[in-house]
Image 1 (cartoon, rainbow, N blue to C red):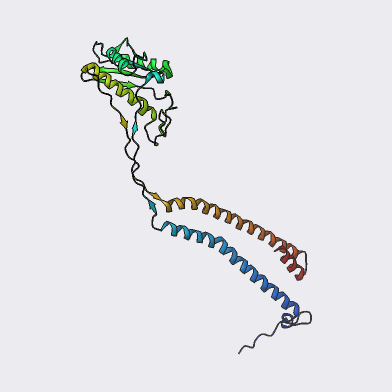
Image 2: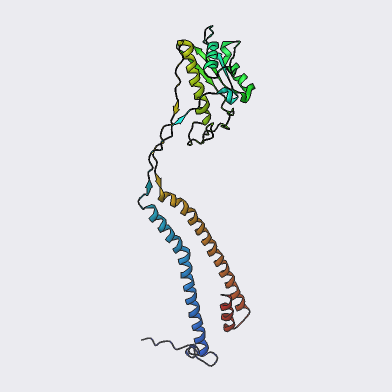
Length: 307
């Protein structure tokens, strides 16, 4: 049987047990326990703050994403019916040209259409003119070149291609400004009377200028070819109804919350990084105090102050 080893010899006249039972040792032991408890609590608090809050926010986001989709389903948007204003070139201060096409045989049909338009539409106005083409095959290029020179004073050019069946083309410059309309706009259409149409791909210059020109030319061709002036017809336009759509309110909410969440997490990580830098500085101060040979009481006092 091996006998237990005796206690180490006394140091400074006292044994190890006597030193552990001294008031100073008890004070140091209590200070160390208090320090360990504080550090443990602080580490747990920082861990909860560093990982708990992002995890909690992530759980909230997951719960929101798994909720039943909250949608709104508006009915189809019906486009309003609009009455087209009659073609009035004199009031608009615009000119309308009528030219023969490349495939049109020698005939006076364009000039008769000009006369019909002048009589039926403009009540004797000279805004409708016949545009002779030197070469019928280059009539399109000649008309567009003259169009570019005229600028805003020319509304459109009508190129007559055939007599039977009647066929013609309307040439309008897309960048030309129409009176009361403004720039050619395909996102929001503005009518000539200043009212706002629903956003679509049909600008106001089309419904208020192109279609009235087309209706006037049709009436002139009917009168010229058939010999009978058509009755006045009220023209109305209406766009196709827009399709019904759904609005996901949960998805819209997540689009707002996620950027805030990411900003919050980044800010929290910066705060944790700064805290660790300060703790490292505090540790260096403690080591410096120890190297200077200060007593334990002074060390813990400085530690409590810097903490």
